[in-house]
Image (cartoon, rainbow over all chains, first blue to last red; front, side, top):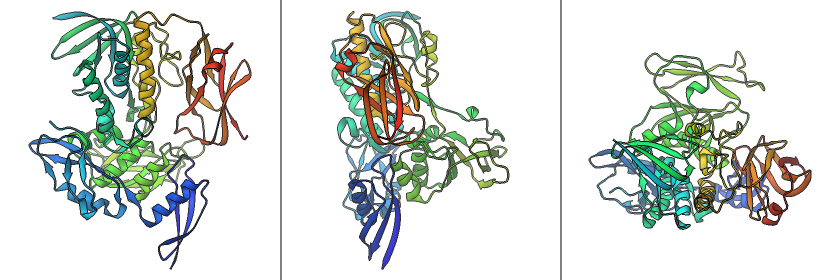
Length: 119
Length: 420
C-alpha cells in the first residue's frame, strides 16, 4: 500500500516540510529536506516515532506532586497509556532524583524515574 | 529589629543565573557572598519546567528543568555558598546598598562590594493586551498554569484555548492535554510562531491541536467563570478583520504573549535600561553603567536557552569577583548598536584595549533565510556569521575573536545581510 505523509523536521529552525513516500509502512523516498538530518528524522518519525514523557505523580500526604520522566523515549502511541498508569501511582517520601517510580511502563521496558528530590 | 551587614557580593535571585554567577565568583575566591532568593527553594522558573530539553549545550544531554537546576544547587551546596531563601529584596541603591526582608531574618540592610542582578523575567499579563470582555476567572498566564499543574498539583480548567504560540504556551498545550484537558486551539497574532519547531510538532501536531496564525482573541465571555471566547483573523496591520469571528466554548484561556525582564530593582538603582531589550545596558563584563552592579540572565535580556543564561552568568560572576578585588578598572568603551534587521544587541558597550573574546547576542527582527549577520567597526567588516536561517524566536550569537576586539577603534554595528 502506498502512502504519503507530510512532516516537519524538528532538527533546526529551518523546519523543512518533508514529503515522505511510504510503501507498506517502509520509507520509499523523502523530499523537501535540506540536509541529511532531515532524512534520518523522517525515517525515524514514519517508522518508529518515540517521545520522552514528562509528568507528575501524586505524593502520599501532600498536595504537591513529584515530577517524573521516562528514562528514555517510549513509542509515541503509548503516551496516553503511560499517563494513565502514572495517574495510579502514589509515592512516599523520601524519593531521590533518578529513583524508579514505575518500572517497565506499559510494557515498553522503560522505567519512569523521579526528576527531583522529595525529602 | 534591623540588621546591618557587609558583604563582598550580593546576588539578587537564586535561579539559574544567580546560581551560576555565585559559583563563578566563589571559584574566584569570593567567600563573603550571599544569594537572596524570593521563593522557598532555589532553582527559579526551572522548578516548574518539568519537560525535558534543557542542558544540551552545557551538559551534552537533555535534562528536565528540575534536574538542570539541581546540578547548580548541588554545586553551590558542595562549595558552601549561602542561599538565603524566602527573602524579598526591596531596594538596591546605586551605592550598592541592598535592603531585603524575610520572616526568619527580619529587615536586613547589606552594604555590598558588588551586586549581581539576576531576577529573571515575568510574563506579560492580560492587562498588557487590552482584550475586551468581562473580568471573569479562568484567564491565566501560561506560566501560572504551569505552576498550578506541575508544582501545586491542580488543574486550572478542562476546555482550554491558548493565546500566543511562544514555547511556554506550546509546552502547556501538551501538558494540559496529557493531564486530561481538551485544548481546542492555539491562537497566534503573528503570521509565524515564535516557538521552536520541535514544540510545534511535539506539543500541537502530536495531539491534533490546531494552530491559528494571524488570529487573535477579540472577546472574553463569562460572568464568574470564563464560558467562551471569540477569535478573529487579523490583517497585515494586525487588526481584527470584521466577519471572521469564530467562537470557542471554553473555561480557560492561557496567555503566552511574551516575557519582560523584571527590572524594578534595576531602575531603583538608577541603572540605564535599554528600551529594546527592557534590560540594563551593559559592558562586555555584564557591568551596568552603575559601578559594581552587574546583570545577567533573563533580567538582562530574555533568552531561549538556559544554557546561554548559565554561560552569561558565569561571566558576570567572574567579572563581579574581579571588581571586588579591584581588578576591573573603569575603562573607555565603544558603543555596539543595532543595524538593519537586528534588535537588542547585548552587550551594548565593549571596553577599549582588551583582548578577550566577546559574544554579541541579539534577535533578528524578522525571519532571514540564507543570510549573514555582519559586524562592522567604523564601516569595516570585522566579523560575519552565515546561517541557513535566522529567526526572531532564536537568539543569534556572533563571537568576536580576542584579536578583533583588541583592534576595535570605534563604534560597532551589527546588521543582517541577505544572500552570500
